[in-house]
Length: 495
Length: 133
Image (cartoon, rainbow over all chains, first blue to last red; front, side, top):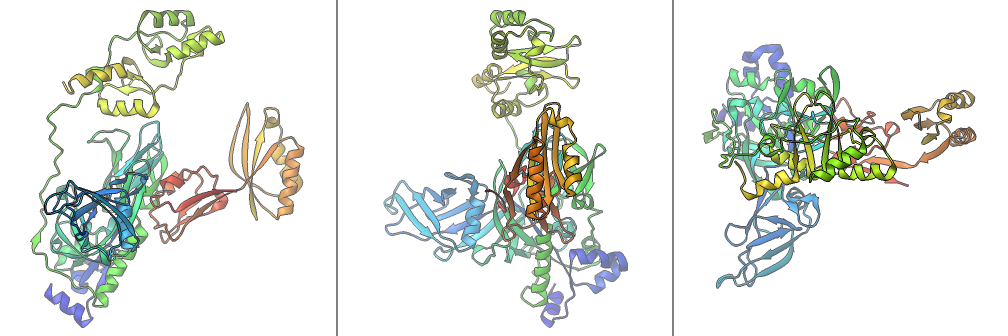
């Protein structure tokens, strides 16, 4: 490392970007590449929700021990001492909702904009003040430190949606029936993918962070190196950052986030590292995952490479599907280029990590003490049904006899063909319709037995309906789940 | 100048070769951006790249043939200062009006836009703006 820094100082270090390295390793092999190249620069620019900033406001007179604090109506966590606060990227504005959040506050701070600060406190003998309202810029406060628990995922899954409705996820807008694919990450430029064994990257590695020099200070949360999903915790001086590389953003109907520009220089200390920095998009695979299933373990359709994803089109079930990237490849390239330039201009020197990153950690799910109820646990199994050929009068009788609002309509084989509500029957009577088939809604929102109840509750809420028929894979009616069934859970959640 | 014109057909008109006859007569070649026709009539969105006078003449011809004509005066704008070329909008654009160049920049070819507006809220930094006038 000292040798490489000497070369930077002398101005004869050979620096290439990770994309340039692919060709060098391909043409000359890793042995020659290791001799020839000193440093490979990487870059990524993507939405990194697990980001935020520590701020120290300084003391007011009379002083306040902030109990709660808001920056432009976005609450920051201040359960640390009196005037320290952490503004998280995904915290939403209490007045503007999804349109403005912690990520936007961070961008506005970097841009030197004025931020409205409002704080409340309970008051103590040493901190008597109970309220504070002021405006600040980054120059007015003591520290403003970007401190991100989880950045720079080595790679990430690609998302699509099997449902027959558009869904809005942290992977962006996903069109119905596998209508599009979204992904994130810079592939061959991915910082951690260029040194996946962490031979050079560790605690104390100096990096490009948001347009200035920052550091890796730990492994990131959810670090999963054995699954090629490693992450890092990063830190850097927000006051020196450039809003070109740190942007507040909104993911539609999901929330706010922070786009973070990050690049890691990788010293080519041996042939192994030369080889890993030669990684190409063809070699980086990820899982094309169905986000239409709202479970932790989502179904995987197949493996895709970053070459396919970057081409803008991916094949699903014989169809060509358009692809959106959520991260910017162009800006990732720019970052790798800027880092290269900094090193060539002797403005950036490499640091020796003081500690390695774990290579064998696994990402555990949360320990849940209460069981999650599934549709099959609480649905009503004895369902009164009707046939499409039944008369309106007989359907009306069913409603009169039973106390319910939904009448599933099934064919001779027990397959669900539609649903009629008491309202449909009232309309049918009013308009002189004779047969159930004339009024039933054939586009039915349904549920499956093995779905978690929370997913179905959200569906009822979204569609403003009070119940759904439960069907199996063949479309046969298995039961019905209504608001009444859901209310059973309130007595005692779980089984 | 390119102008966009929405034709609304009634049931009877949908069976007549109106578009073809207008094209034949004016010799102007409109681009069909979007069309939906059924037994209940339908609509066709045309993009016409011709001098203003010619477009006016075309519109008049359609009206003469009993088609309801509405000129679409909307504009979609991509704010290049704000856009950072992620491409979140690309897979939502049904006509390829939003596309990625070889150097991975996101560009907008407004002529192809049918104003479905799917892209507008999908932009993480609100770089796509629709104006109606």
